Image (cartoon, rainbow, N blue to C red; front, side):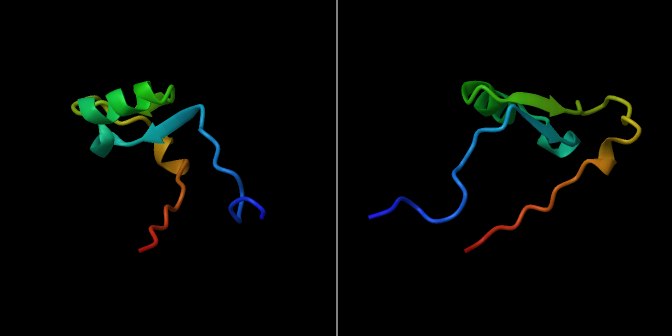
Amino acid sequence: MAGRSGRPRRRPDSLLGDKGYDSTPHREELRKRRILAVISRKGAPNIKGLGKLRYVVNFRH
């Protein structure tokens, strides 16, 4: 019997997030998984061009 169908899961090296994801629990979880968090801090000025790097995330129920 073969393994799961689809592409194998891979851990990303880093995660890019906007200020909505700036929280200690998010950062700690990423650190536990050895993923570099590139997340804007709340209250910090906006980074020009950051919004150009976007990926659509589809959730399946």
